[in-house]
Image (cartoon, rainbow, N blue to C red; front, side, top):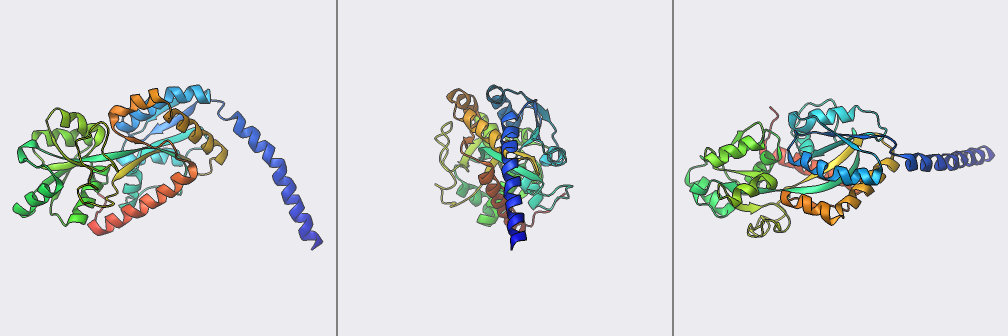
Length: 326
């Protein structure tokens, strides 16, 4: 008993000794530039968001963010770089729910999601807009279902790649409605939208930042949006929920991850700084045109729960829709 008591006392003393050291380490962090690997190309929604918040973050953290675009493989290339980086708080990954989708699909990866990462926070939710070519005269998702039925399932939808949010949203819709349709994958969102405008595909679920300018110009027609409420930038577009598709669940997180083992003190400090930036009206005004639903309350712990729940949801969709990796 005495030996156990002595060991317990020694452990407590060691913990007490480390506490000031951890506090001092957190206070000193960051003391050099932070590299943010963006898993998507320059000009993409992910890239634009991180660039908008980078300057106000520099003012708070007193260190610059070095944006490093590493696009490819639906975000997996950038993710692999960060998964293998030192967990010292100076390499972060900014990516989207597509990372969970390619994992749910069974794509071979050298890292495991989400276990290869330490969550930092979710910045925003990206809703999708169900769009069609104006010549079809569709007004609602129900009209699209009727079109598919009238053509015996001979309708085609664009995606920005196998395993992308546009692909998974379309498959979710197909599973929920029993609709028959054929996927036409492209290399990215711009290519998919080009084909949609040209009328070479019938419909697709496009990210809101890409779709809304085209809707305003009349080049495509919007049938519904997957956000929880109507978007302030597009108040005339009804939500899937309003139209009877309860708990449709196609809002995509855009978040920061760190390598596994990154100290909690560091991730909490980054999360607090980002949330402070997202409370700034000027920053929100710059982000508003991209039609995202900003989070602003995410923490490392809540983001971890979100990542795991999101992955489980897409695993179910993959099974139901029999989605296979290329």
